[in-house]
Image 1 (cartoon, rainbow, N blue to C red):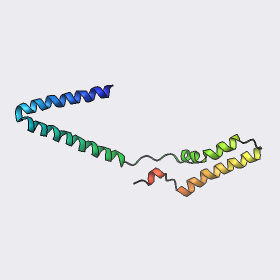
Image 2: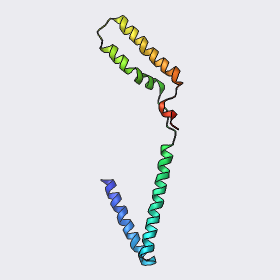
Image 3: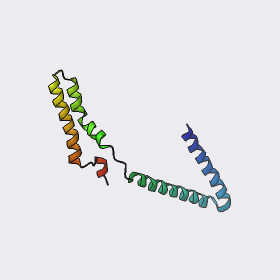
Image 4: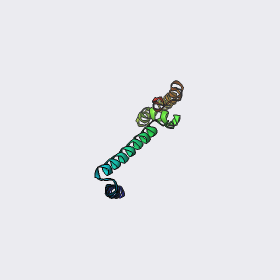
Length: 115
C-alpha cells in the first residue's frame, strides 16, 4: 500500500514539475526536461542493478552443501527396517559422500563458478 502511495505521489510531483517548467520554458521543453530526467533515472537504476547482479556472492558453507547432497541417502537409510550393521555402513557411505564432495569440488560451489 505504501509503495502505491509513493508511486502516486511521484506522478503528482512530476505533473506539478511539468506545470512549473511549462510556465518558464514552454510545454515542449518541459516535456523534454521530464523525459530526460526519467531517462537518467532509468540508466542509474540499470547500472545499480548490474552492479548488484555482478557482485561476488558469499559462498555457502561446505558442510551444509555436502549434507544437502547426502540427505537423500541418509533419509533412505533412516526409513529402512534393517539391522544396525546396514545403518552403520550407510552412515559410513554418507560420511564418504560428504568428504568426497569436499575433496573433489575443491571447496567451490556452483555459484562461485559464475563470473
